[in-house]
Length: 278
Length: 313
Image 1: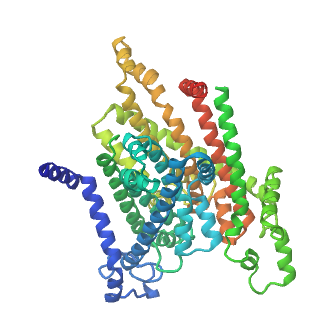
Image 2: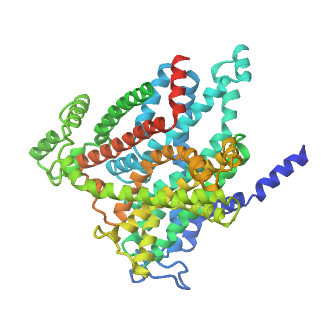
Image 3: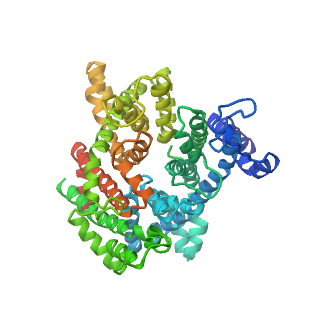
């Protein structure tokens, strides 16, 4: 048994997709966690004379439009980006799981009403609703999180609803019901533990989706403006000086691409290992 | 078939109604009083009353929603606060560039994604398949707002082959259409490949080969026709991504479409324009999804059988 577990763990950690994604994500988390210390040690200083300077020995990634070091800007942006990603997924998953369980387990009129609400939210394509909400409420980190979560919970709700509807008909759940187990116990002990693998897979893809939406909104000037610029805001800055300072567009975009790829790889690898249907 | 179509059409009506209600309520997301936000603290009470009446905010919320639904039913989307013109008229003026761009993007996606998917399925495990997989992985992960500037940088700034931005001759369409179409082509490529691989293993393909059909007939007449079915759904579902892409692409290329009108509205806090554009995008998304479902029922006869059996069973 121990040998089998060892073999499975070895298969996980030698999968190139997992190696790549864990390396990128651990680096990103490390950078974000250490950003406070880095900023204390090497404060972010701006000098307008250095505005948009290309990469050099002194500034390996060049300078941003405020005249600060782009590498430092990316580190500061990473912590905000990760904060937005984490909190948005947490919020949208909490709402999505709750709605999915309510509609999937109880069904009836509650299911009908909540599913129609879900249909209406899903009728707004892509990030349009999030764009309208952030613009109307005024751009800030927490508005951004609310706006993305307001549209993001629908996918999780639909996923959980489908799973719960199928799980509640399984023999072991029916046995628990016939033995008189209370509804919270059935949900907590028998249904929720069976959901974690699909939720984990979905979380990886959701994180990459949130990163793209956050960066997209910031690119449009609708992102968080109450802190350091996020990667999307840096791209927005770079747009106006594309010819003179192309590094301001290339580098933040590459950071987004590498992170999205890591999360997509992680999601696909998790799906291969955890989802028996794949 | 008739009942299926009727069911789908009837299903869209309450959702469309819900969308109009949600759009009508959008203005209530403004923190505090929208009139204060729009006019600032130095506005006179007269100006405040006028704007409140113009936005219909003097009515109770329920009445505001009813009024807005009635207006939309008449094709009236209100008038712009900045330009003082009917929003519907402004949208119609900007519609053509967006539709042109969306159609060209779909063309790029079909021309790039479907053939690549077919060849990678036929050459499974070879270099073309590997290239196609990398293309679709990167294509899906690459944000439109980065791809656009990168294409401009490469083809306009460094190589000087294509114009940088703004709508003009046919060359000005190339970069925006590619920017919007590449992500969709990556998805179509992946779907075509997996659908082809699934169908290539079917018994009817073996039978066709055993009958002595040439490989081009087996692929073109048998496999492709069946494998293309899921693409209809995928293309329909991805229409929303395309619309979002339109807003971003129009911003990157200064394209005078509905997306850039919406962004102008967002930046100027011109709420009727934002409401009108969101409504238009959602309505077209709903319409395309409905048409996709109906089209799917026409091309796949199993859909109607399932519906009938579900109805009678």
